[in-house]
Length: 398
Image 1 (cartoon, rainbow, N blue to C red):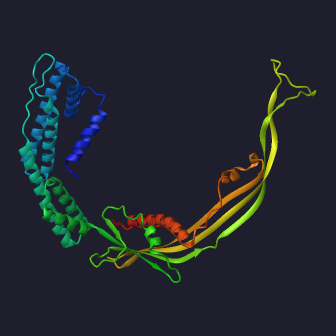
Image 2 (image 1 turned 180 degrees about the horizontal axis):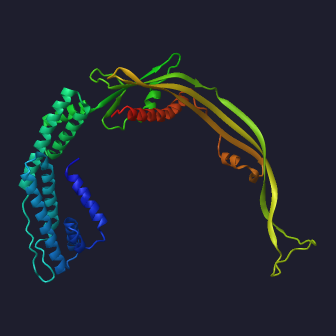
Image 3 (image 1 turned 90 degrees about the horizontal axis):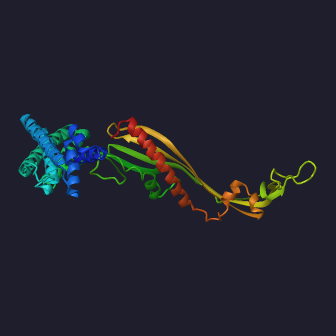
């Protein structure tokens, strides 16, 4: 990530949380750049420029520039090459600050008094800082890469890679072929390679699509590369073997059952009678009524289509650096196609909730064996990902 981006994000964050804070308060809190952003926005959108606010902008600019230039001097005096990142970022911050103010100059307040705001040209200083920061990251990366190659350390190679990327960020205006080569070399050395292979135990024979589906989520890991085609140029650190030892798909099944559904429902209203058999009246003399409850029923024919698949796939994880199988587990999958639909004769209001939910369902085409197998692979991929995550954590694979 560019060294400039954190400063930009921080600036946006503080601008958001201080949106309701007055510029005077921001200056008191020494949040000078946030105050400058707020004041310059106000002046851009409003020609009325109160003297106290113009003076406040002048103060905020003076304080911010003074702090930045002092910090740059202190950092240079330390003679530490690592400081050039910070120096480059501060010069960029100065440049952004001046870009906010420059369109407003000359800045004149309501009393026709011009603010004393002097801009400085930091382009040469920015260039120098970028060059020195680039040099630091470039040679630091080379030193780390040499160490990584001699010790065969993936983790040192990754550190070297980050330095090379930072150097490239500073050199974004042109291409350095040596740097690109170092970036690739450090990336290759820093990567953990995991070869995935699959085997079927006779008489099980599954399509590659089944296994590719089962590992389709194993691709979102930093510094880990999963691959499925053997390559002489790649020496895997780990090998995952998926071995399906059992694969059973049932025949197409069909069941038909008949039920009588019934329930009490409201069906209009009825008059309420008193104990003498006369219509009951309320206090206003109006006849009292209540919901009329009747029992309704209907005859239901429920049809069920079903087909299932069971399979067992062995997950084996081998640490090739130790020539040792470090984990084995049988992953068991059961998946069922289950379609239910009904027809009925009678009052629909009598249908049970379960039968009501089946309304609109129709007879479907049974999935064939390959379709069932791919649906099972969808479930298997969650198990494979979970097992990998657990074992990667348990064995510090990164």
